[in-house]
Image 1 (spheres, rainbow, N blue to C red):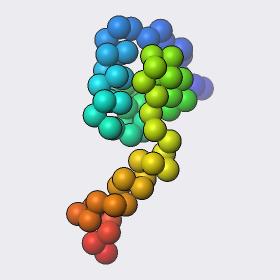
Image 2 (tube, helix red, strand yellow):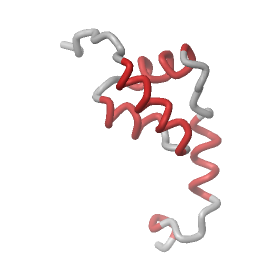
Image 3 (cartoon, rainbow, N blue to C red):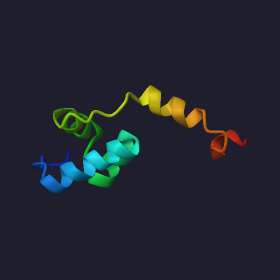
Length: 72
């Protein structure tokens, strides 16, 4: 059984815009907002603040030499 559809509040929208501005991943934003990734992506686009594609985010992580997963 999936989550019930909740309307987006002004506070949710403000937090979503902050996540995009900070460069957070859509996965992190969805977890913090307790919503699924698809609904977060759609709402961000509606607000004119789309998240970059995941491949861009992954490349940014891979370029950071201090990433703990690259130490092994």
